[in-house]
Each structure stands twice: as structure tokens, then as C-alpha cells.
Amino acid sequence: MDDKNTILCRCEDLTREDILKCIQDGYRTIDEIKRVTRAGMGPCQGRTCRTLITQILNQELGRAPEGNECSSMRP
Image 1 (spheres, rainbow, N blue to C red):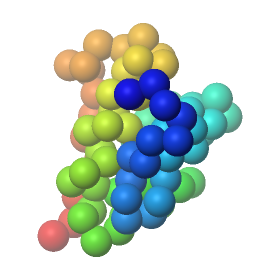
Image 2: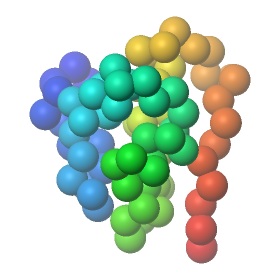
Image 3: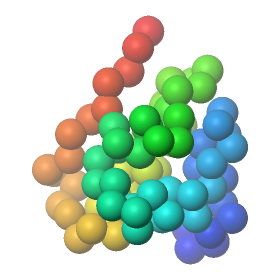
């Protein structure tokens, strides 16, 4: 998943490049990215994009997957 034009959040039409830009701007959690971009706030409530965004955060920040907090989901 190296293509920056890959759509990660279909509901909000966000690409990998959009998420990488947020990380470069200093956002470090999925909740921060969610507040700025609306990722995970569409009809699917993050069921599609939450995992992908978390993976990108882990890769870019060198985090272990076990240490991540989950963003809240609403029914």
C-alpha cells in the first residue's frame, strides 16, 4: 500500500496522502486524525478505514501494534 492516491476512507474520500500529511503536521493518534479529517465519521463509522489508518500510524511512527488505542465507534 505505497500508492499515495489509495483511498483509505471511502465515506469521506480520504487518501493515504491525506493521512500522511496529518502525521507530518503532528497528529499522532487516530482520534486526532478523525477530528481533523472526519475519517471514520461516515456511514461505515470507521469499519473500513480505522484499521488502515492505524497501520499507517504504526509504520510512520515506529509503533508496536499492541500499544494502540482504538478510536470510539458509535452504533
